[in-house]
Image 1 (cartoon, rainbow, N blue to C red):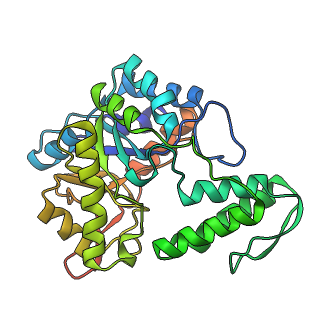
Image 2: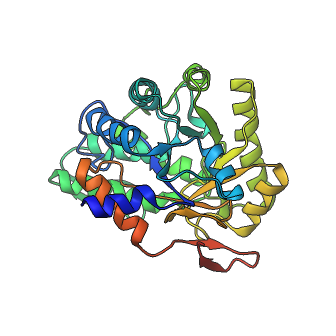
Length: 326
């Protein structure tokens, strides 16, 4: 392991950008990929001891000017979960580490993202047969935890690519059939976002309502990007010039058109979920990231090593073509 870890730490001119969402108080069987506080702190401690953890803006500048330090790493969070403030922020402050938080503003102050509503519905639904009312996942069996996990995943995929209003109505209809209220405590408040900013963390835009940008027309995409950014800027009283594409897969979730929109709006950097490392010459508005946040200690770093040595991800070109990340 030592040799592979060394290759991650000492290769110059590249940066590993890590993706997180929630940091849980305790393990949650319905969210098996989310790290607990214990796991997150162990990961951040090793990063603090062994790596150069950079603000994303510094990493973008370093990629552009060729002055990245060795063992460069960036920590990012998507969506705006309340446990980012409750659990992640104290650890980051304790270890003096920077991070970037990409916030979808529609869900702050008591909102709930569609995927979380569906996870909680699958958790709460009665055992046995369940008619979700969401085609093509209508009649399902819930006889085990594995069933509930599988049904939650199928429901999320069934509505993720629907137009926003249809997505909302299908989720609300499912909750109504269960007689279940939408969770109101999963996402941050505006005040907690301001706390992150005041603590020196970077706040980035993640649209207003977390749509799949590729499913919108150009005007709708620009409005989603602009509205989320403007609400965050008013919230924190400062400039927001970094962005994360919702869902984040090139071509499937965002288009070259959306990259151009960010460029025209003056964003300095943006991250996708294309799997890979960011190297000199990478498009600063399509940076790849790595996501395996629940991995523990040695496994976490073995995965970082394999990612470093593995195949590059892909980005979009002007004609929508996919090419290798440099």
